[in-house]
Length: 122
Image (cartoon, rainbow, N blue to C red):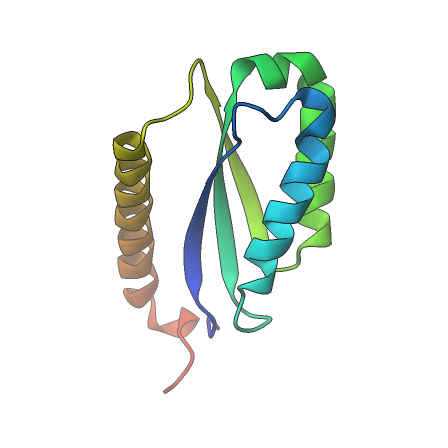
């Protein structure tokens, strides 16, 4: 049964973060996201925006390994959705991404509520 909160966290890697600094940056940011969990049953999805040049600097295998190890170390983070960018997102584009994530959460919430056996009794 579902008892915790379900939420998205949206992160954009700053342009000054290089491929060599990405692991440290993500570890700090995801530790902060993990610390924001209010209980062990909270589920957090992370939408991560990274510039293509950083991803190409690491290569797909290292990126997969890095993200997998970070998810393994943060028990409340269910997954990281990676989005490659050719340029950093503007504030407006980040707000739009947040609205999209909120709409997705609402849709998932509606699906869960339609299945009462998944919801803990009140």
